[in-house]
Length: 311
Ligand code: NDP
Image 1 (cartoon, rainbow, N blue to C red):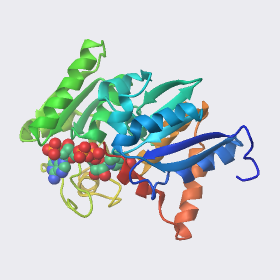
Image 2 (image 1 turned 60 degrees about the horizontal axis):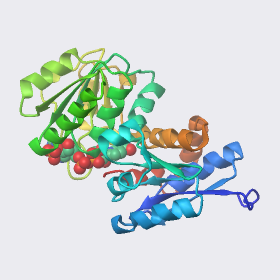
Image 3 (image 1 turned 180 degrees about the horizontal axis):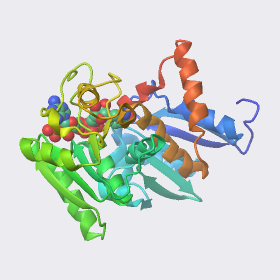
């Protein structure tokens, strides 16, 4: 990399706290090297109270852009010149692009799931989707699926508060002309939830149920007859790599190639951001091979960054 840094090299970075363990610098610098792009990507610690100044620095230093992680995503959205449709509906930003001094905030977390599904051969277009959860990750997924042409997204969440917030995002989208049918129910409507899965094309778990160590072995799906051969099951959880939900799906008729864990979500949300910065496709297969080599050599796995994703 040092051979290509020049007086014209553009700076990019990730802002948030903590960022010391972020995998983003490795991921983006690999991509700059791959294409020979004149950019360099670093991590900058920034808490919520420093977001305004940090964004002023992005302008002042003419940085090409930045990724934003917790706890800065919402405050960053309040300091943009423009917001992408998804960022506007969610009120949070994970990618800032600087075009000649105009800062546009995007959110690519939902793209992470949509692109990962596509990488596994599944389009969300015209599909009926059941989405478990109404937290930060779930909202990003709901909005992206709706914007990208899903036929319906039915959201089930344990708590009422987040569910009502999700409903209001859905209503805003509807008022804005988004055609996708969005419905919202508590998980307590258990029979309805299982019925919806029976007729769904894709089931996405975006809750922490199943996550190691707090909720390992937990799944919201309790009636195994809801799984079916044509169902695609995506779990945003990446630790453990096979969650209880995924194992249950595998044991009850879902095809192995249609049961997908959350490991790819980080990579593909990065691919979304890289495209916004550079206009180029992330060299995903080469990056995957590079990361696999690093893991084999015992370097800290890149997935650690995903702990930074919550809002
Ligand atoms: P939030 O705290 O914003 O939301 C958590 C969601 O999970 C809420 O809907 C919450 O429901 C629900 N939930 C938590 N525990 C349970 C439980 N035991 N039973 C039922 N519902 C539960 O977190 P995020 O949305 O940011 O993250 C959610 C999950 O997604 C995490 O496991 C995280 O690691 C993973 N993730 C993975 C990424 C990846 O790259 N693969 C990226 C981002 C997140 P309620 O409202 O009732 O509390």
